[in-house]
Length: 328
Image (cartoon, rainbow, N blue to C red):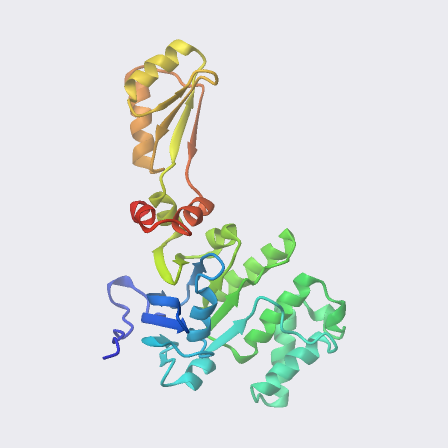
């Protein structure tokens, strides 16, 4: 019997689910690509799926977008079952691939009108919609220029604008800022935030971990077809060992006295520093400061070091299961 997804609920302060999945599995021949993954993505949030190449990210997106069928499990997108109501799903979603799907021989406006025609919008509504999107994405001045002359950032903005012609409530963004310069990346981030502010749900895949850190409300890490971790960026970073408070002292006598107070600390006589394991929480930092205060020890400087998403990614992917389990 297929697993049953509980209906979306807004109780207990939770938003209704825009995307739900239970037990998704997919194999190609004898290669298991997805090994029973579960997802619940609330409406109006940004969800980032991270993982190394070959982890199953693209397969997950293709199943949720109704491009391929899962071998087992069940998924709902926008309130529609992906297997039983694929047309209903397609009416709710927009998809922006890794490479801009724009026609370089057409102008920006013509690209948008072509997309409007595919959505069967009346001509007047199509022109109004195109003009609105050109203005929203700051492409009005380039509206009548061939897209072949556009920069990479302009092409990506137009690609996203084309996705919005059908007013989707859920957008799948596959590495949306690949190849963009830092300024264009930040412009794209602002556009994504604006969409979420209007209630759109974003499913994001990216190889830029700082992008996931900045944008995502929740992140899932996929490795060898399994979800090995899920949580907010801060929650994931707190799971990874290596965080510490670093104290620097002016004299070796103070360093020695402090080392005696923190038995698990790592001492560096050359730099006169003491490295104390920390989970990065305020309570932990307060405890360190309380010890210094109660013993009248004066540190020259204090810095807090916490693992970043790079550390999370490297710890949780491509490593033995036992090591992943210890990081949970």
